[in-house]
Length: 312
Length: 204
Image 1 (cartoon, rainbow over the protein chains, first blue to last red):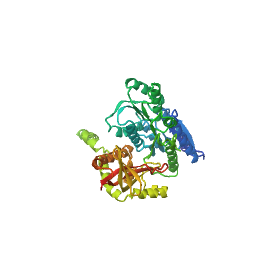
Image 2 (cartoon, one colour):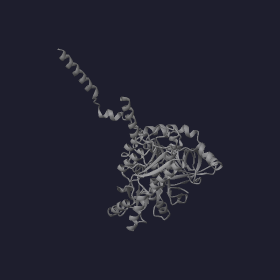
Image 3 (tube, rainbow over the protein chains, first blue to last red):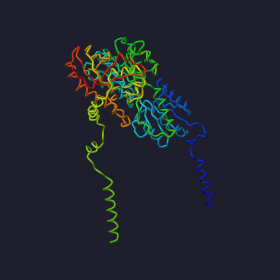
Image 4 (cartoon, each protein chain N blue to C red):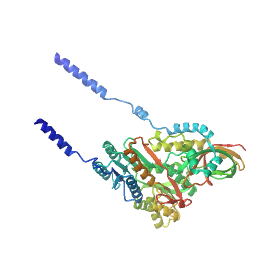
């Protein structure tokens, strides 16, 4: 009797086991969890990562976190429960996303961060990031030269909780702050969003109509700032600088609306992340904790070498 | 009596447990033990190693010849970079005659007929750090530390190398130089080479 009970209990346990890792002989599944699909740059990043994973023989699905850490948590839980074996991840929050990464790690699912980092050296298997700081050092040098070392300017920051925001800001200021003739009259966040960039610029222009330069933490905000400047009739008097290498900004440089941007290479980051997942499945474990992808400054001088999101 | 012994033993156990469970430390000691990366000290150490690196460096003229002959091989043999991409940094040496003195640079012409613009104001970025080949990416878990190394090395060069050179240099002077240059393998432009100096000596 007792033996029968034990067998029944064991059988019921097997029946209750969640279907994580259910693979039924098909290809391994790779999840691409991206901060937002409301920005073309991140759409390109996510689609490239998914395409690369598929080209390596895996099943890939994109999850949109809608710039919300709670949605991101749901995406992680769904991915882990649905048997995804690796996560190619673009986080929403450097600190807030750590718990999600750790959850995946505890479930034996490696996480490869793309473009944005999380503040953990133990959670992600590897983080593949743009060298934002160095890119903004170059932009800072260019800005000083274009402004002839004097004038009032504004800085529009990205999402305050994202490390890229501060790496870009610090890189820029590591050069510009040596020039006392350049006065920053306002520094405000517009969350990497084009509409917010426009609103912030409109509001700053009310108080500081005499600015001659704007440094923005990404191209979307730069384009928003340009719209506000154009509406105020100041587009020709103010130098606008962005970061990303988006389609709008590349065209903006050609049209003389934007002075400069920094080309990131989302394709390189996405493909590297997918390749790392492939290496992981094949047994590799010694990944660099953080690896940087070089960025390149784009101005009117070298614009013909570049297209949106990369080189010609 | 037995009860007394029992209570005493329990009391000793409780006191011992409490004593070993709680520690008091000075906040300053805790902060001091929280080892932070010292970019200033690291940069000083790196700067001290640079003479042995520049001594073995390829001359600028030879590098230009090798890049023109076989770009991929020259980039692989002499280029360094911590980041993935087509940009590589090269430690070079050479000498040239001053052609122009500008606000932010001094233009030299080498014996091999190459022009090189020596940065005398905007010495910023990763060129010297990366070209040195002395920094291993896997030794660092924090990208901010890596950026700070560049920032601090460049600061030393701006303070120790540039002022004396800028004060003395004249058109027509012969200058021995060592330093780092940046080249992009996909968009090569050998006509506008900028040198981040490590040493500059006017030999007249």
